[in-house]
Image 1 (cartoon, rainbow, N blue to C red):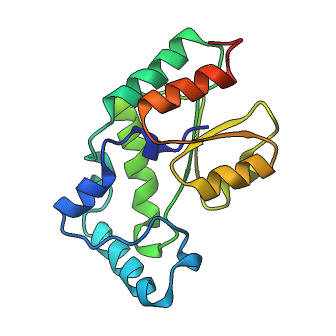
Image 2 (tube, one colour):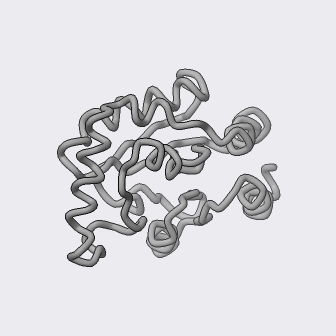
Length: 171
């Protein structure tokens, strides 16, 4: 399962271009009280752009190419597992925008499944054959506790090396 964040070139740049003050990449419940209002304002600013915010984020071509390689040259099932923002002001159009982004950059029906979820990702881990690729270490740690493999995404080169190691018999 892949977190769609691994495919985007620089979502932080998109946020900066829109002049939106961002908050640390941690779950809202772990934010210090003084940053919780900033998180709410962050999502309100995103809401002004509706699904267009997601659709116009530039793809990371190296990662997109790597995933396409995996699709066409391995036996791996390729799924997207992405948590939707919990903020009510963006939840509904985030699903639409994320799906449009995936279709634009991979084509319709490229992925075996697309899971855009409200709950914890680790609940989708079915065992040791499941690999999660995610940019958040807390998601990776929870996935491992659910008996899956997890790769903390840093860049396409690191991802390729990790996938080669984990799937050496499939690659």
